Image (tube, rainbow, N blue to C red; front, side):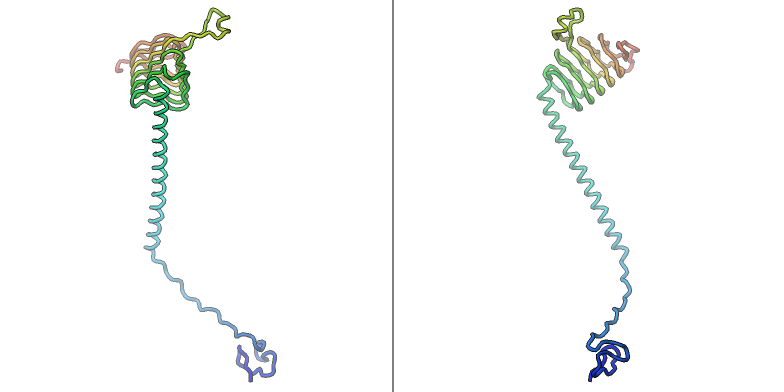
Length: 221
């Protein structure tokens, strides 16, 4: 005798069960797995995971920042080495921002703790002396080169002479200041942005304009 695997009815000599319609020889129907309640996650575990993740983010950020600082220090040291080779002298604590352009370099003497901002141009066809604690704004120009004014033919042939520039200690040149050949700027003076300096400027004054002229004396310099 044979029995239905689903309902247990006699299916001898039959190809299917007349009770439930199951084909003879078919595997027994499988009951769906019983559902079990989900396990509750300990909230402390989530807190721990969050703290660990936050620590990882902070550690990565610190690592990246440390790497950036290291690169800047290395670039600063490399820049300093290049400037020491290029310039006649460069004092301790002085630095020059890129882009810096000059004719020769060895005719430039830069004192201690002085600063040249972005895009400075120093045409050192004659000596250029910059004192201690000097601040020079972006795109300033120190121009020593001269060309003939009255002789047009010599000018056409590109004849050139030069006159030195001297900038005293603790001078501040605003952005875009142009200092012409042969000019001396006295210590502790301030020159307004965009000034064109064609004549000497005394010490401890504020001067500005085109051409640059003394505006007032600086009492506390």
